[in-house]
Length: 113
Length: 110
Image 1: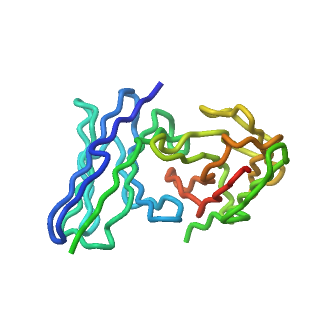
Image 2: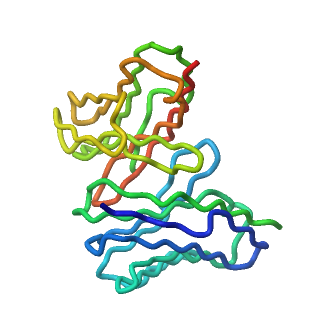
């Protein structure tokens, strides 16, 4: 079955710097890759997602890139702010849209001012 | 706006009790999911449902059951709670292929 590896497990940056989180997946049939942000005491919030027919997607300060050949995808946050501090999860699914996700173990991002 | 609600934010139960966790979505979605989240283990799928009265086991279904009598409601049942079921439980629902989570229920079993 699908396996998703996420790195790093913790990431500390200064306010204004960029942050990059990387994930690899094992099942070449995977075709949907969302990213979630989870703040303390809350459920994960979908922040951006990408489908296998797209190589890059951007939404303001966040962007996701996908390399299907290498089976990895990355989250890029530019001009980080203290409110970006949270746990970030990547996920993948080899099924049709709407099927269960396989999650990475998460990255704790700390942005210091 | 996507809305997934869970019946309790915090719950404390005793070993051996039967526990019900409720999840409601108001968006007429077919697919609903239950996960548990533990430090160092990430999110793990317990059960999911593609439609009313349909259920599928996820990766860790042991000790749990589910019920989906109405489309908007998906219940997770701990038949006899044990201390190793102390965890954060997250419900999710699908809209246009994207999965959205509820706020979570932090369950403590004493």
